[in-house]
Amino acid sequence: MASPVAVFIGAPASGKSKIAKRVSALLEIPRVDTDKVIVAAHGPIAEIFDTQGETAFRELERAAVVEALSQQAVVSLGGGAVLDPATQADLRNVPVVLLTVSQDAVAERITDPKRPLLRDGIDAWVNLVQKRMPIYQELAWVTFDTSDGDLDRIASEVVSWISAGYPRQGV
Image (tube, rainbow, N blue to C red; front, side):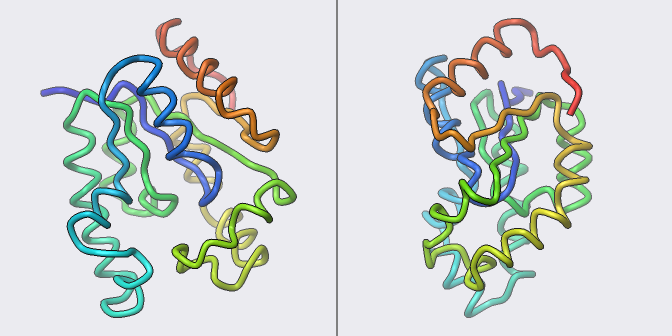
């Protein structure tokens, strides 16, 4: 069974989708963005939250994660995907990249109404990150900070890390 080349996790607006897109282009391999998979199959995430609830969304998300982790690709997960214990177990066996971002840098990134858990602004983001960070850190093999916004440089650094054989770094 195939497995991902790298899986990106992190808080909403940390750059997971954008960095994964660049890394997949640099490596010339497919990319799977689980949020995009869900939207393509089921409609906007905010609409799923509003009409079916977070539990229904998390079930769809788990199915998308299982499928994504079975592919040889660069995978980016939604920020809350790591909350599922089965996903946590799955991620222990694949190279996981944690993307972090400072509160100041993220403030201008979270104005998108498509992010249902961030409708209350930066305070909601801070609370969400505080709750999830221990899980993110436990799962991560390596961490990159995206606060400076130089996504091409970060993508190159991720590719170098992959090429070096995935050395685990302190997180």
